[in-house]
Length: 329
Ligand SMILES: Nc1nc2c(ncn2[C@@H]2O[C@H](COP(=O)(O)OP(=O)(O)OP(=O)(O)O)[C@@H](O)[C@H]2O)c(=O)[nH]1
Image 1 (cartoon, rainbow, N blue to C red):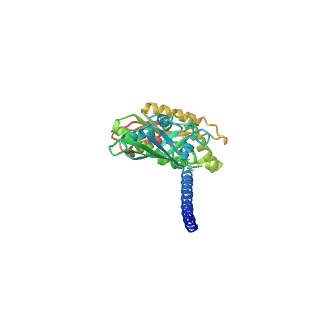
Image 2 (cartoon, rainbow, N blue to C red):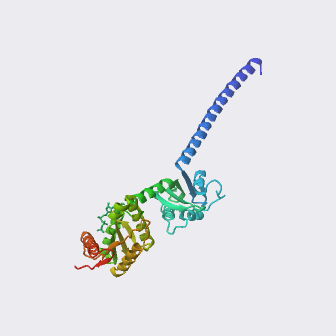
Image 3 (cartoon, protein in one colour):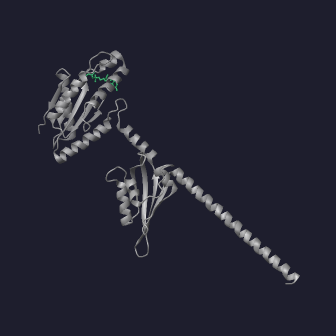
């Protein structure tokens, strides 16, 4: 090779090197961009508390994204490998007939995309609420290839929602059900009786001469009397009985699956419990009761009127007593 050719060859190689360097630079830029995008995606997933899983239908191999592992296991407890069955077990948690497991199995078999919310119990015993979306993908001859799922941890939002829901149905002063919730239960029980002719009885009671507590000791003492009475009622009712604050110093107890004879005994017990309360203001507290059983064919408004009149009978007859009304069609 003469000097001229050698010179040309060097120039050619230099140009090729430059082109390679440019290509390399471009590739590095692309890689950095991809890494940045990947990092961004992970950060977004972390922020949104979202993770993914995928199940290969041929190997039955399950893989979880690191974000999902974090959501399910936290930093320290990520297992080396997780089988599909253990994953389902985890999703199903301790709850029987867990909707999460059921729907996931449906998607695995049926393939349709589904989005649903469910509750699960983490290995550390903590309750987790998740929004879950999963789908199965098929090859051209309809064989399932893989199923993928996206899970979002919505525990905080759910807990706030539950708290708000609880607040909206609770009487602030006494912690009992408020009138709205009590009325809801009343309507539902009335409907059940109309449909099944079941036994359900309501007890309405009103504290006697309650105005005196406010007048003699102040509103604050009046409030404390209402709270003490509410607590006593809670302590002395079955968990199936529903109790609510119906008005100022008026309470309503709904005893499901209870005929009027049994509910009258409940009312008598509550009357005694209230009369035995020892208030710090030393004034006795009593209540007057009306008891009535729902009847098939009786409209709710008519029933409430009958119940109210029965309570009024107790007031008129001297207070601190229980009166029962029997339905006459
Ligand atoms: N402290 C307090 N008082 C309340 C509350 N709601 C209603 N009241 C009071 O309860 C009193 C009810 O008075 P009345 O309707 O005259 O009845 P009563 O004094 O209990 O007399 P009888 O029902 O006839 O035995 C009123 O003074 C109301 O202001 C409350 O949340 N806190």
